[in-house]
Length: 76
Image (cartoon, rainbow, N blue to C red; front, side, top):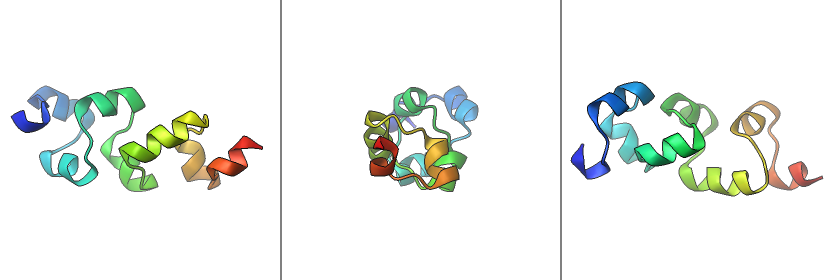
């Protein structure tokens, strides 16, 4: 727990357990910045680096999941 800098209350708030953090390589601050919780990441298969890339093009995580929008298509 100390290794990831996540407190027990934060874990409860984001519904994230230690193993999930290891799996996705996401720490508390990243989750706050992108507003991503564990279930979203599982649903859309989005990891931290992808979110940064999509954010640059103004693509929301819901667009990626719902419409299957690629970054290049979004630019048009």
